[in-house]
Length: 564
RNA sequence: GACCUGGUAGCUCAGUUGGUAGAGCACCUCCCUUUUAAGGAGGUGGUCCUGGGUUCGAGCCCCAGCCAGGUCACCA
Image (cartoon, rainbow, N blue to C red; front, side, top):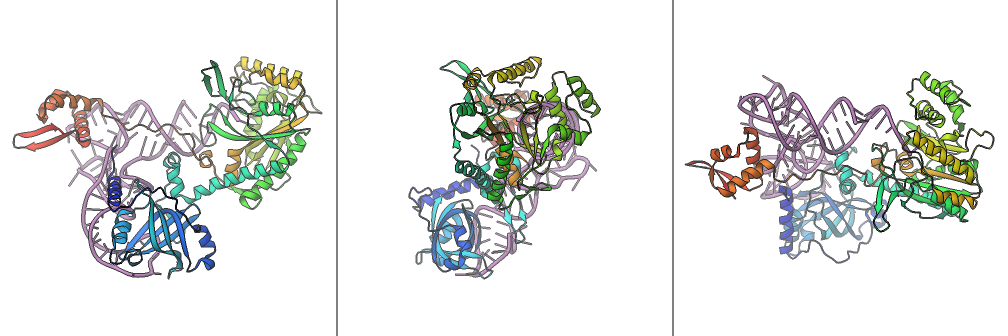
């Protein structure tokens, strides 16, 4: 491994610390007495008191016999005031002059003991009496500085670096931590809401023999002992409904789902959906519950139901408008598509300037019109209801119109946030709907559903009327934290693999092999033997000298290349 | 998948018509006891994303590729 100069210096410091009898990676527990946040928010009670803190040293300004440093713990940042005389043991100034000033670095994890005070400038600080090295950092951190006006200088902002090395992102960019703390507040808020109503949190299989419950391309894997293909789940719906059949009144699961599709700023191959099923309810009840839930989440995570999302201010205060999808289309396009067949719909699509193809059925066409012309207009939370039957194979037929289903999607900021319905519990109807999906699949739709025979068998035992909902957690967190990309709300978003450090190139190997049999050798002889072009030769010999495998020596007899 | 933009020191970025690779911060050496992104002086540090090509000479021009971001398409 090639070390940079900065890394070599730190390794040397590490060695010197050991020589001074300081263990750079001690095993012993380090007991702190408080946290930085506690001190900052209760200065009056801490003033003049001794505290013990632990954290990472984020900066250091040495001014002769006194220095200032910044310590960051999980709760915040605190200035340290370090003086030679306080740190020294009588005449022995090693601890300050050598250890603190020379051998410690930005990024090291330290324990400090000292008194709380305010500097002349008024900044709350610790007057340090004792420093304990808890972990030596060997890689230099990016230096991000914030000035008095809150302007950030040299910010560590390249998304590639930030996502690939999230740990560095979390260390230097304080706001990143806030996003993930809020994410957990959001899921905790949901759990509280459901648990307080007696709903049961359950876990269902991630590895499924039939990937059901949604329309998506699954990841495939293989079980060796059973010698069967298995799929990573694309949804957990069919398993949760089996549990309703089994007699639970309400079950929910935060489900990591996997879809083998494109990646962009709103799609990650693995993502989280919360699915909830409640027996003896319908989709009207579910809309009421959803507004109540989202209002609570907004209050718990942001302290208010008004949340900024990009340019817009979105109010999660219940209730939300409820708009049937066909009415939405009529409003935004002027076309009343109710009752239209496939060819009539295609005419409408063409009039609207949309492309259509042969694989599209009635449901898909209506979905396309809505997606293209209506969806983006719903900024404030809005329930879009009563979707056509064809695009909702798991949904109960509408009680007053057999062409529609009892389904809603919740739109926020022009995007789908939740999808819910009165669940289809007629096993014979369900079998027919699956068959229709199969026909779609034969027509070329490679995402149509498989038929899950065991799920149908479960329905035949009888499932109570049930309403279910799926809420996209990543998207919800994006809304609540005002982030426009999913990568910002995932700790470790999927990235393409990093390129490996290149080994010796073919040209370098060729030159190296000649050298092995003949070294030292006149540079010009080596060059002509290698048969390389000027550029390739230059590249190869520079590569070899750089990696300290060969050296070029200018002697009285001429330029010689020698193996090292 | 298409197009656009970018990739240069640990970090943030300059780099002229193709002519000796730069700055700030960080780091190293020295001076400084309550400083505020940045005190002063000096110094070290490079796979200019990778591979080809053009050229006497390429960070820069040409071709191919990799990675990232954006727009669109596909997709919930």
